Length: 598
Image (tube, rainbow, N blue to C red):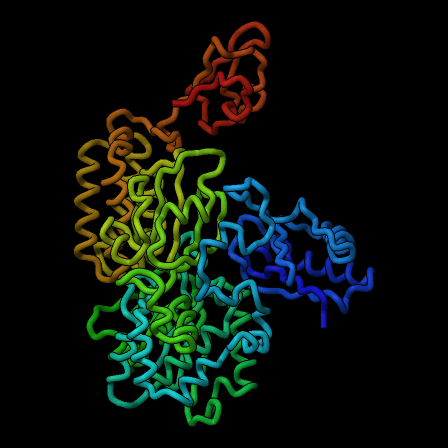
């Protein structure tokens, strides 16, 4: 039995930062020092704290290393594994607010202490390519319980009683959806896992599939048993190669052990899972477009009703849940509906996984009980905005969501509260914006994404969003007027009321919410032709304060457009506005604060 286990993140983020090379360097160092039998290297899924990657944890000591490089392997092995002295310069630490002493135990660090992991409970803990490790943590026990101790209706009743709502955006009650499908006449039925995660900045589902693929497979089999389906599809975008590879491995391993396929656990119930790779179309996150894509057609939404639970893939009853929703199912069956429903708020039970990004100190995945406030997530878990910048807003729900401001920081996070404030939970993207963010530019960014991803089937989305983008561009480039704002607002409302699918109907949300909450910024752009945050280049003007200029020529030497002139040591430098490309290099270079931007 090994003395230590070293868990190294092998998720997409850390893999791109050479975590595989770190593992190889550690293996070599362990072999050189004769420790290969005492220390075991395990590649896991995402730990969540992506900002600190590549990261690794040493158990049972709970030592957590961050920003590790392959060249650190020798020091870690000789100092820590041989001499028992953790390498403190690489350790993740926190400060005790009372004693002001450093905290090294990862379970007490605020980023993790504030979280409650259900969907992510195996991520960063097990090797996702070894089914034995999943089974060792009660894996497939829920499936066994469902098949041997529960009727299909009892399974559905348990999911209903838990209060689990879909984590893909709409928040529809999962048990109710399953009941609709179960109530349809016997025949072919299907279970679909929606892993087409396309929101900018979202990586919740990808991380679950990379770190704990069996939790989704087990849940899909349970869902199949509950509604009478024998086939499941996982619709996953091809841009997730690590997740796809681990799903393929997991499916093969589960089949070999008789946990998928024919006559599972001798119960008479059979369930098969197949992968379907998407081409990365954002609209295929909408369930009817996803179904069209699975059937080999162009991924475009179709009107509802009928809903997929009545007529889905191949015209048969189909339930569609996203990855995070499925990741909760086995835990609910094992621990009971009362356990799950005791977490969260009266109308939003359980936890929610968020991809925390943007202008935030601790970028990464967080899983929190419903009802946790935005302030707790942004300041206590996320560590606030870096460089002592002021928090300005947070965008939740991606292109379908909206912005929340400082006055909303104490809002408990749940489905209904966010909708009431003009935003939504969506799949779980949470992008933090600081004082240097231009809200008009943020709205334009999301509208560019929507225009690029619109399937083009309905006119409001195909033409309307393109016109909204043109109006936003006019505002950002100084051509906007008060009439532009009126047209933008009216058009956004029209698209919201008339677009075919849910994605089109919510496409204007980022624009409408920023216009409502940050109207002063829009007015500054159109009335004063000024970007208060200094982001919109066409509205910027650079100049040099002659009283502060030291005549050092540093700004001129670093100007790529040769727009700055002066005589070193004699005359203050000046910027030619006709030549200036507004790159900001002069401001970054000047050490005396002489360059002004307005």
